[in-house]
Amino acid sequence: MPDLRTAQPELPALLEQVQTHFTQRIVPLWQGPGWNAEMALPYEALNAQQQPLPAERYRAMACARQLYLFSSRIEQPGARERAAALFRSLQRHFHDAEHGGWFYSIDAQGKPLDRRKDLYTHAFIIFACAHYWGQVREQLVESTLNAALSVVAERFARDDGLYEASLDEDWSDLGSGPLQNPLMHLAEAFLATLSVRDDQAVENALQTLAKAMQEHFIDAEHGVMLEKPRGAVDNWFEPGHQFEWFFLLESSALLRGSELHTSLDRAFAYAEQCGVKESAVLAMLDADGKVRDATQRIWAQAEYLRALALRPGGAGKVLTQLQALQQHFLHAGGWYECRDASGAVSRSDMPSTTPYHLATCLEGLQRQI
Figure 1 (cartoon, rainbow, N blue to C red):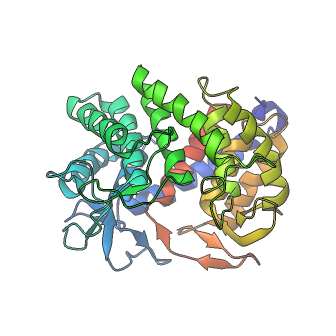
Figure 2 (figure 1 turned 120 degrees about the vertical axis):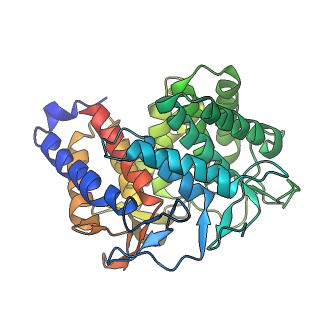
Figure 3 (figure 1 turned 90 degrees about the horizontal axis):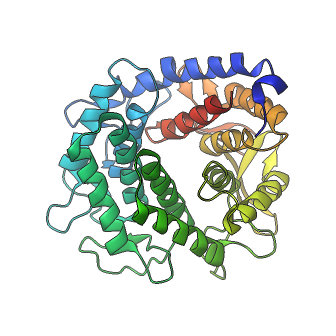
């Protein structure tokens, strides 16, 4: 791994500036105007004036991401109390007492809205509960973690080592098939679980999933991780997801050196070549490198940045990309979610789900410096 401090002596000071912005400008948004105290849930998003957008729904995934945020390593007054409230709200608002699992969303009044069960949501519940349990070691939290792991294994799992992306409220098949993004976050959730306890079943599931991803999602020519199974109609890849996968694989002793790791190591260079222009990570490309969508999203910038910190010879790029993140995406009132192909701000709202990406990015960088 690159020695970032030695290679770029100015990097620690810049990282401290960005970390301070995160803890003093961004996190407090979700303790103040972004928090619906009556519902004990974060609003879906704030506008550029730091006011909540009209509440139409609340998602279990957003609640889980904020649970991770407030149980992560941030030293924030009130973080422990906020994490406890979010954990209670996850169970109170989203758990399906009749069929098990968790609803996708509730409406502004707290009634189930989208009652389907999706893998993406359940992966984040596992991820957040693993981190939270690692902090508090409470039996109820571990019971919730175990319940989510069981639901994924018993309801979403397929015979080919992959998992259905979405099922109906009563677990009946919707024909969704597997999709890359939920599966990546499931791998992340398995890794989070293994970081706080020994769990042979989870370890086996993770290794089986990695093999299935290699078999079904890796493009044979360029090694990139496709968004749909190989051979699906209208397929594409996202550079941000290549970098996100690389970080997960490279930072895992269990998966480093696997066939999937080798593929994503190769895909990293290809995604950089085709999908990073003037420090901006582009949103979507065809497997042959043709740009489909040149939108620049802050989450992809963050994933590229933390992945670079694990690349040999990446120290100079880490500095450049951290400067780009600070200059192009952070502002006094928070952050810009998206810029368009020309670099103009195309989304000025601030979703409650984005701080998760910034928190994992900053934690990844801090580990290397």
